[in-house]
Length: 112
Length: 158
Picture 1 (cartoon, rainbow over the protein chains, first blue to last red):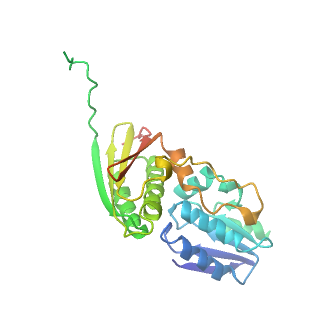
Picture 2 (cartoon, each protein chain N blue to C red):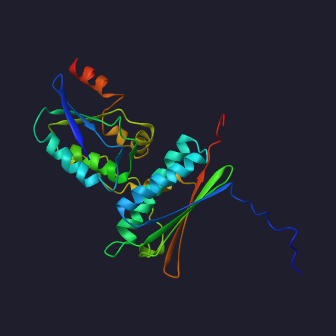
Picture 3 (cartoon, chains in turn brown, red):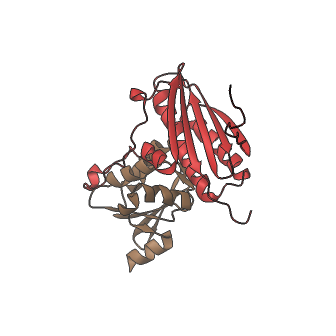
């Protein structure tokens, strides 16, 4: 599981360099999100455009990643592929996160 | 006298796909990719393919994490039968039975509270119920058998 970090216009964009966040990788994902968001900007956008599959464990790990950032900081999502979008919609977790069509839009909208 | 002429006709599946896997999280991941590849060849539409793969992931991970919990992971047999307008998938394992010998209800976890109390789990059975047409569980002779049935969307242009 590899996460890539970039700061764009003061926003921390984290890209997942892996096609799946599933039961086998959920704990590792959560730990690496903790390490990646430990310091840096308060506003984080998780770019999931390279992720084609998230199961319930992966969904739980994304929710946990937001919770471990604490109340004062913000985690948005961007670039949900169709099957990933379906998981968020069915579980209503799409109402918990601000979801952007892609990372560039997320940065632009948040910076302006 | 038994009348044989009124028996229901046996509908043969268009295609049968069998995948055997060990009940561990990494083996499940490989089995899901095999199954997805085989289902893609069977010309399933993307939406049905996504639903079937997700439900299979949830059901197989339940077996890995609960049925075979605390023991050497055993085999899981997955058999998919593709019909013209539906798909039936049967999962069989020799792990522990489902609690109370019945399917968990599968309610959507409550996400109405503050951030620190948001649910991080409990979505699996909800997704299985939500995305299947029918769901049957049987326990007999030390074997779990879970049958999942999916409606198949008519495929346009293929």
